[in-house]
Length: 192
Image (cartoon, rainbow, N blue to C red; front, side, top):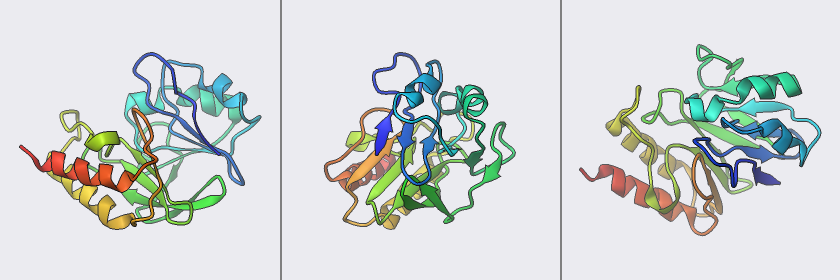
């Protein structure tokens, strides 16, 4: 089961995905809403937090989550506040019942990761790409448009034609031909 706990929340929060299964994980924790209560509507406990990146809207609730569940936090850069363990580029990470490959995809932020499972045909895209060809901002600190374009191309090369679901950091998830949305994001990012 993959559930967006931030669905319907007001404010500047990111999406927060509860991935339930053998290793129950929150992918990002959002901000400015009670993610602990939302989590407990579905499960009693979680095993870990995995971050796509450390912008405030994705980690604002981190203290509440780690205190409530006593879990460690995994991300690309352990020099970032709150990140306990490094996930290296191309490392396998267990989310729910499936193994996901972590793809380092900077351009929106230097520590950005996408998580892709060929077996479940699911992608967590963070803020790299969004539904309908949207792509992450590059006007914030650590943003780099050329690097973002390279990361979107890498993602496009890394996911196969059978991708069935793309869960993004903001907005709706894509469950109809998500690969097309990645292709559109690449085209849009390349336009000046």
